[in-house]
Picture (tube, rainbow, N blue to C red):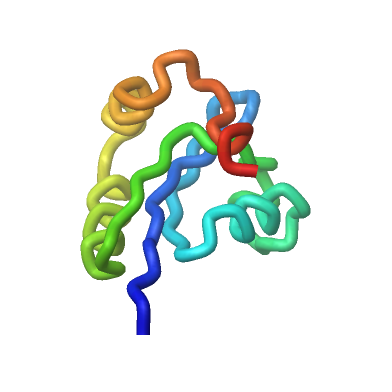
Length: 96
């Protein structure tokens, strides 16, 4: 059985709300967020712009990274986003 890449991602909306998640199907998960099929935080706040993504070969490493990022304060999350995406553009334009 082949290894499946797991992604940790940060989504944002136009008012600056951030959401951190993890998935093995990034394109599918982004579509779920955009179609508001995911109940809860992302649906309530309309969080669907991909601002940061990192790929992991091992799901356990992705889970550790997701938990670490979720534990960070907003300022540190914004610093992480700036390392990859200094203009805060929607990175999903490159994925979908």
